[in-house]
Amino acid sequence: MIGCNGEAGTLVNSFALVSYLPQPLGGFLDSLRNELVSECRAKAHLTVLPPRPLDCASQDAWYQLLDTLQDFQPFRVKLGEIQIFPVTQVIYLSITEGYHELLRLHAALNAGRVSFQEPFEFHPHVTLAQDLDQDRVVAAVELAAGRWHAFLQSRTYIVDRLTFVQNTLGNRWKDLCSVPLTSGVPAR
Image 1 (cartoon, rainbow, N blue to C red):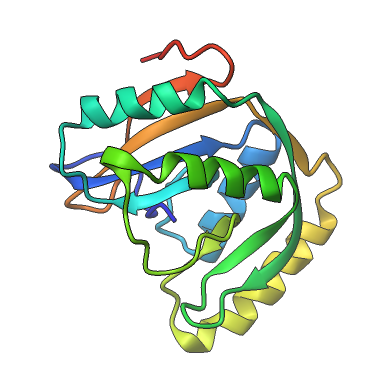
Image 2: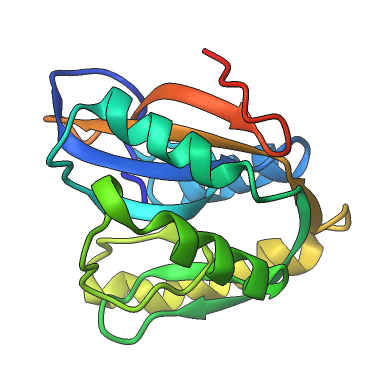
């Protein structure tokens, strides 16, 4: 889950790998996230490697990820329904297609220099709201469900590019590098 404050600030040792959602789906979810959490500026994304510290240079970690990603082709993801993680009260969209591919991708990438014992079992999803006061969660779920039900455009997209991001002291994520799946050639 990537924080909600856009990109700026002093970089910290916290990295993640994400797939940004394309337009118009991404724009709709950006607006919905901002409606649920007004200070949220994060772009809609699907997290492949949740935030983690690195014991090596970020460039070394990136090269390891590139090497592993050569074995993966683009795949389709379909977003499902609004749900809530019971322990954290994070509101999210479930994944109904591409779920197993995401599990396989995560398992292959969470190794070597970027290996991390995550606090929760990896569960592919798209975060809509987190860190809400308990009394706001039910209303936020209802609002999100209503908006999502009214969204009549495609709920699917192709995961064909992944972006390596780094957090800042202000919990604002900065894009470091990205790579299209199948090519193994990084883009800056």
